[in-house]
Image 1: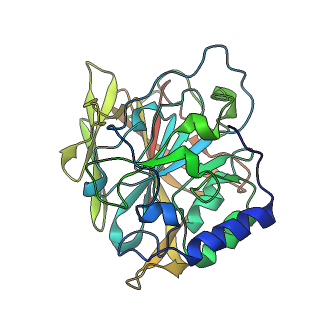
Image 2 (image 1 turned 30 degrees about the horizontal axis):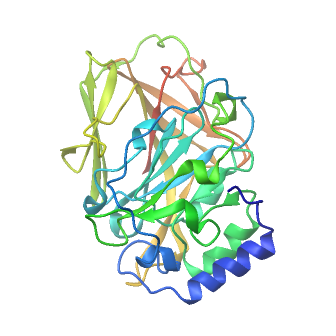
Length: 330
């Protein structure tokens, strides 16, 4: 049953209460709510892959954004192939985490779901009150999430939407049923206020067979497949697949060079969380159609989308379909 969006005071009270009873974990977020410590309802079956959203959806409402685990123990993920946009970001220890944005199609199940970061709040301002699904957050960050212009849907607010999958230890086994937090269905493509522009292949570019992006303790490789007209995704040297065995791929990949500083928050080991700045401008490489295009990205304010412009001053068009954006330190 759908519940009304909680007030900021309700969100903060519930979140702080959940945190007070949570146990600390040795990886990812410093502190998690009870459901992220293995006490969510148990699943009786392996999470399934997605199904299309109902046809004829109106292009209104908020997008669904899910924070997805991306360490080796969390792979393969579920429902990631249904995302319209996937952001890759660096977290503690040089590892990576994913933020999946859904607007045109909701999978039946998404996960594993993990914790939010301070950088997420800035990145999400480009959307109109998005719904954020996450497992929990560092205790001092919870008030910021409560005040942010978004609808938080962690297990503290929507325990019935989450379950624990079998075969993996916590915290790498928490899954979300999107329909439980978005009962009206997918909002439609118009909700993707990213600023991205889609269209014909730009002129020029450099023929590119593969591109690797490295974090201190993680790496992504995108290999062009002419047969599929997509970049095949590999993570840490291994082809990335869904739990159903489907290879993850995208027609457009963006390597966006950003400023990465140290946030105010850290994990239980004392590793400070990187803060990825997505407002401003910088260089980028746009990969599509087996070519790489040099670009400049610009996002003047947090409420703006991000535009990508070529050396000729014209927008760099993306190919129609999912987009992966890898945020990497300039």
